[in-house]
Length: 172
Image (tube, rainbow, N blue to C red):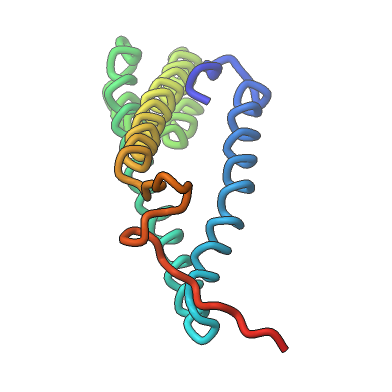
């Protein structure tokens, strides 16, 4: 999503990225939940499901907060050079965020288009930086999992010291 977006692009520019994220989450979340819950006895599966849900929610909240802060910082860093000549009060308001820039542009007269364009371009700059940081974090996590994840033995099974064993199910 960081590659194809620009201040002049539309929704179709980020659609491939959104589809890839949705497909990846759809293919990963259900199987991972199944593995987590089925690795414990039936009477503990509710706890496993709850722990899985809370880690997902915590991770999402933390990710949104961190990436949102990066986006906001990227916006503020990028907009300064684009507001040259804009009255100080309007420029200060525009620096606070995209919605503020849109609002202040309504009363900015001749500087309205400059403020809107500066806000759009700055938001995209911040977005691109945030997407690259997110991609770097995901790459680092992937490398960590590949290097430190469960190791298969020569027989192709997971090493017993790193595996979670599931109890045998009793048939009726």
